[in-house]
Image (cartoon, rainbow, N blue to C red; front, side, top):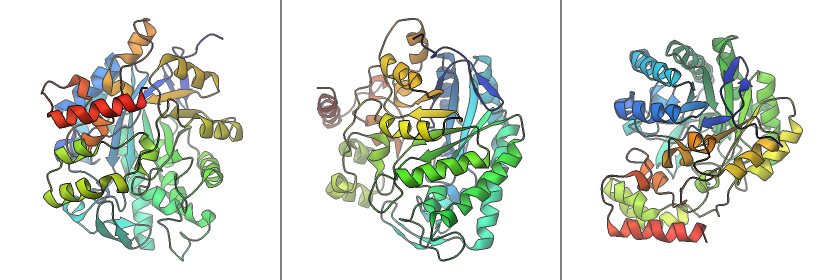
Length: 410
């Protein structure tokens, strides 16, 4: 069977030059919540490296939705710099997408300048922070902010928006019974828990019009008992299709409960705490981090078994596979299994030119060793692969990387 990897593909009104998409892996490069030169250089390098579309990660639609100090916040004053970025991406022949969302309870007052909000009131140990449930009028206003985010993305020249409805962020917090304990029309049975998502998508689709692609990242499973499983994930995916999305990114996991279900492997605790600046958090994670962030075994294409269930159940909507793709044979296997596109994060951080090298036959696999060093540092400083650093790492981090890479590459 001839590979379709380097054939054009369509998502709604958008045609992409090949079937590869840089996933919305958080870069931590938006210093002061604005685009930086570092962010510009990274995404333009990925575009020049041959990817079909690159996705700028996790832009919050409001200040209350920020998880990190160096996360994008979509607002009018940053549009000229985002336009500079999208123009440069287009010049390299790639399409430009931006992921929009709201972190919900995954933040704290120091970042949001307000009490974090969620589907329900409670305490999030992961942040850690107290948070309050949104009122019904606030829910309506929040949905409008998703539409405003799309309008700003359009103004900035993006071809596509990816709505983040997974991973335990705000829309996902409404969808999951683990975080949604409401007694009104937005809580209770799944049919009600989907109402906030429906409101957001209504605003998004109206703002996108008929010439902008819209995809949604959705959980196939929350990844733990007490959350949504595959059965509920299928219902949510079918509802997103009814909402009019042009494609789905099939993911899973809950960052406040099952973070490594999303990323797989082990969290490198020494790396994570090395870059932390808050002393008490650094000390706490050193003591109990390995218990709070349990390891989930890594294997290539780790979401494929679940994703195939969605492919069978939703035969007539573009589905975008993400999860553990670092080699040509697995990429072709996923595309041959009926998925229209593949997303990659760590492979393109390891080597922004990975797609061109595949096309030119220069390699069959990137040299990511799955130590998750990039993820460990991502929460404090810009995301980077340890193989591309100019500075020398402390010996204890080198030993941790070596140990983890040996573990997953035996």
